[in-house]
Length: 383
Image (cartoon, rainbow, N blue to C red; front, side, top):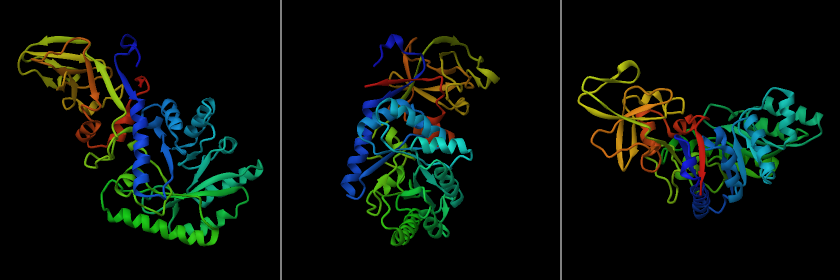
């Protein structure tokens, strides 16, 4: 770990050894439940869920990931450039988003060997036209919409469209995949329906095309709740890599723990008297003489303003309430009667105060909280 003198006041501590444990734990658990799943596509979109794509992808590459999954063209190109620099450029990258419209962007995708998720026949046609013009074949994974209703080939049209795409001169169908809408719910009928629809259409396709190399549908919820799907041979772990489940109620496998701890420090302490108010808008009125500590973190760092008078932080084995409105750069907490001192380390969320606690207060999901951590918050990598 960096010398504590060098640490910024507010930072996201990323435990790389825990990331490795998570990755190995996921791979080990899935191998125990089914022998068919042999490949892992590590999802590193949105700056690796706020953890920092450069360092996270390096560790996952060294740990043996088979694929990386990104959300869009720009993420894919950035990651490919980075992987080449660290001598892991041979690991395939699957761009899960839609194809950009600009010919130059498509050429860049082709030139960098990015594998492309195809969500419509029109996208496939456009990609093939550009690929033909530069005389380069492109590996594609066909996305089938089995009920998410976001992107993907309509289930009714998928069979005919895939057979037409199969005949394109410069596209090679390397995989077929879909996305589960409610996989975080155990024994969910809708999820079962999606899986069955997918298997049915892919079997029909394979009767005409031969076996498709990669078939994948399991996101984090699918990995936890539906680990033994023998039809599939690749998984797409997302938030589980970083030590979280999609919902507080969904229990993670053993050894999976949070990778990030969001920290700050106590930088100012003062006494306030009964009747005084705290922060902008004077939304908190002090009921009795109190000790208030100020912490240099705010909505400019990704600490939601909606936690005004609702949030809590962890210091010296205790939780302390946020009082007053969250500022851009500061929050205030009530530490009356405690042993809290200047420069004490504060855990905003982590192993002692899970991010689920925050997301639940806000009526949202852990994904959003992790992705909100601002670029100005330094990621400090340990272990």
